[in-house]
Every structure is written in structure tokens, then in C-alpha cells.
Length: 106
Image (cartoon, rainbow, N blue to C red; front, side, top):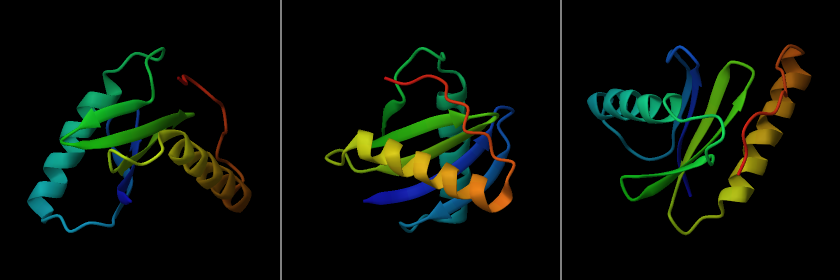
């Protein structure tokens, strides 16, 4: 199950959030701050999966945006990477300016 989706710029600015599990506004801000710090400080050669608070966070960088999805421990990380890639392709078709430049992978 996907708990939330975050799009964060390389500077740490949130571009989009979608919450599928109930989080209070204060908790949402805390989650965004915490995950942004973890993901932005990881090296480009490291794996795109992070264990966080009993969940897995799968992320992928396209151009200057990090697409992050929080999933359950038992969910398939590679399938979520495919979902993220498909989402980026849809955005690229719709807006015409989303880059699909690939960076680090596992």
C-alpha cells in the first residue's frame, strides 16, 4: 500500500504531496522535513530504497526532482520504481517539459 507520495526539489522545496494515510498537519510537516533530509543527503551511487519508521521509502531522481513513495515493508520496491517511472512519463506527455534523465539505481 502506498501511504504517501512526495515530490521534492534538490533544494528541499516540496512541489507536490499526496497522502493516502491519515496524518495530522504537524506530522506531515515533520515527515517531509525528516525524509527530505534523509533522501537529499544520500549519495548518487546509493540504493533508491530507504527503511524509515517501519516502512520503505522508494525514491527516484529525475532532473531536479525527487519522486518519493512510502510503502509497506512487504511491498515490492522494484514495482514502485516502475510506478514512479510511469508517472514521470505521463507528466512528460502532459506537460512536455519533464525530463526522464535517469540517475542512480540499485
